[in-house]
Length: 257
Image (spheres, rainbow, N blue to C red):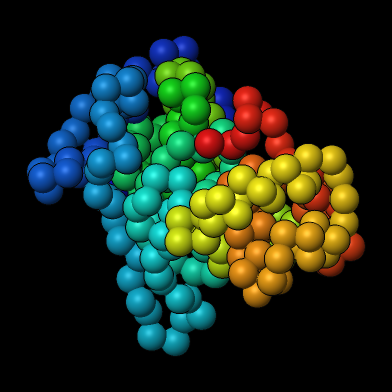
């Protein structure tokens, strides 16, 4: 299929039925099928990326891999901007799995050609639906991406999903989540110490006070930060995280996972 001009937001009735999905199964086999059928039947978390992020000489790009605490998988990213968005999805309690470019959507352009687009990220949500997302580097969306985003919103909504262009997040929240992400691995879970932490912070109190009550800060802080990442403890992450920030335990039924 030759790639041609972009589609615009003025889409004809039934347009979503003409959107095709291309994806790579876990065994490495490439497949194509109507998007509506694929969205409801394909386990995207098991699919490989339809496009990889290349290293380009002279470009300020740093592809890499993020270990997802959500589902224990490695998620590919192309740059620091994308890594931040992967991190925030990993921390989002509504997300249960993350995949990098597991699908490329193709749809007819207005001049008879075809348009192809592979969203940067896909997230499986707790309700079974999905999120397709592209990352906006500095917050500006190019006319090209804006045109494609209009189509992707329609295609996603047709199957009960969402599409979103992820813009740069609040820097304070990002810094706090990045710090906690350093303790997301299960090795910091803490066992009995984590159980005691939930009791010590049963009511809101300054972080440092609870840590000193629990024991040696060198041992306690990693366990508390792990619990803050996973939602067993909570703090106001929109403000700078410091030793006097109030921390409280989250009731069992309201925890992230």
